[in-house]
Every structure is written in structure tokens, then in C-alpha cells.
Length: 362
Image 1 (tube, one colour):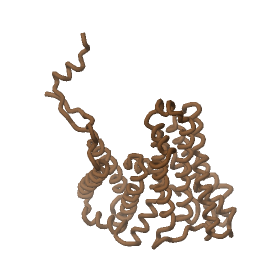
Image 2 (cartoon, helix red, strand yellow):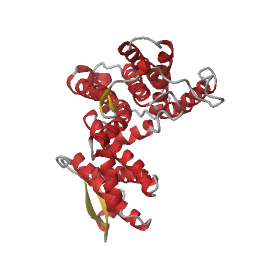
Image 3 (spheres, helix red, strand yellow):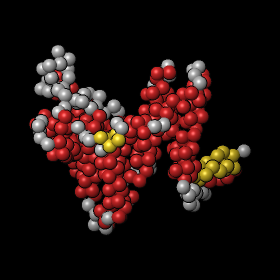
Image 4 (cartoon, helix red, strand yellow):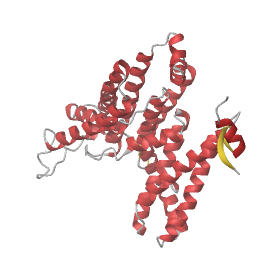
């Protein structure tokens, strides 16, 4: 009698990650059927509603695209840091920082031409996210402080700052006592693309594609991959790890900040505490499923956007919104599990062999 162990394959299964993603999706939907039946709902009717509301019409597609934009940029922000083996857990706070900077520019530039105001708002949002990423970058590069702790803690700082602004300096005097910021000027709105979709979808796709091109086709991208795979090799090649860490974490924060600026100018009438709606944390899932590759971020974000939009729509059928969250978690676990088996295989090891391998040589 032996035990099962994971053994690394000599070569990963071709197309393993897309296949793993598909397996994760199918597994999640299958388990979802069981959950819906146990809760007294018709699974086919629920899934049909989710499909129709997320991708069943041009209007549905437009809503899903709007949802996928911040997910894609947040996922890219996490993936950028992940390319060097770093974890940016602060995308949520960086999105808020970007939105705050964009809202500030909107207040200053009221009455400016729309193209100019929107451009300045988006550039300011990048700066806001980058500034929030600068502290963890310096701490990690100069004194080795774990970036997971610092980026995570700054989420709370960004949220409390936004609350202070909305309840204090930015409080709308016409809000009748409610803590609301003033409405954004009409010039601060991103133009429509189709139906309810706005040009933020195009901007985010260009950013994702541009970073993917830079990471795969330039010397900077090559150095980034080398630094991420082996610090010793990077030092031997003359690559400054401190500089790369600083660049990557600040860039990661800037990309997340852009998500906040687009979300504000594309989908919101005013800045509110829930402007991010958890996109920064969902971006971690998006990046993980995309294997920290920009090429997969857009596709994963689109799927998660569809799942979230569909999950919200089924509440009118009496189905809990938690079903959407459960489906996302099941997709993640299913895809990660299938991804493991695309690179490893299960083999049974005999007990005698185990004992001989574990016993010390005489």
C-alpha cells in the first residue's frame, strides 16, 4: 500500500492554463446547479437569466464591459507586481486614491473642455495610485519590509481619507445633511462607446495590450523577467533589483489608480465610499487565474465581469447574491486545481520505497 504524490511533469500540458480555466468554469457551474437545487431554485432558469443579463444582448454586453474595466486594470496591477514575485494587495486603496485625485481635478477644472478635463483626471488618477504605491516600494526596496503588509494596511488609510473628505471638505452643502460629495460636472464624463459602455473599455484594453507588448518585446521586460525569476542572476547581469522593485510597485499602483479614475468618470455621478466595490481584491483573483500574464488578464476580467453582472441580476428571482460570490470562488479553486495537474501528475509511491528513501544512509 502506498500513497499518492504530485510529481512534476517533464513538460507542462499544452494549452494547460486555458483548459484549466474551462475546467474550473464547468466545475463551478456544476456545483452551482446542486446549490441552486438545494435552495429550491430552477438552475436552468437562473443560468439563463445570468446569461441574458450579462452577454445576451448589446446592452448586456455594455454593462459587462463596464464591470470588466476596473477588474482588468486591478488584475493587471497585481500581475505587474507579480512579474517580480511581489504581491500588491493594496490595489483597492490605490483605486480609491486614483478616484480621489480624479475627483479633485474635476472640482478644480469645472468648465474646462471635456477632452482636456478627462485627460487631466485620468493622469491625476495614475499619479494618485502611484503615490500610494510609493511608500511600500521604498520600504521593500530599501529596508526589505514585506510589501504585502504595507500595501494591505494602506487600503484602510485610503478609505479613511475618502470618508474624511466626503464628510468634511468635500461635503455637498446641498445634500441636506447627508455625507455626499458634489455631483461631477458634465465635462468629466467619459463619452459613450455603445449602449451603456464608455471609452474606458478601450483605454483599459490599450493599457493591458501595451504593457503586455512592453513586457514581452523590450529589454526592460526581459530584465523584469530575469529579476523576477532569480535575484542572483539579475545581480550578476548588472540589473538593479532595488530600482526594479521601485519601478514595478509604483507602476502597479498607477495602473490601479487609473481604474479608479475611469470608474469615477465612466460610471459614477459623484465620488462615494463604495466607488471601488471590491475591485482591488477581485483583481488578485483575476491575476492569479491569468498566471500573472497580461495576455490573460483581459479575458479573465471579462468572464468575472459577466459572472458579477449575472449574479446581481438573479436577485430579482429571489436568489441570494452570495451565489455569484460562491461561483467566483469555485471558478478560482477549480481553475487552480486543474492548473496544478497541467504541470504535475499523480503517482503512487510504494511504502517500502518511501521507507528506503526516508531512512538515513549508514
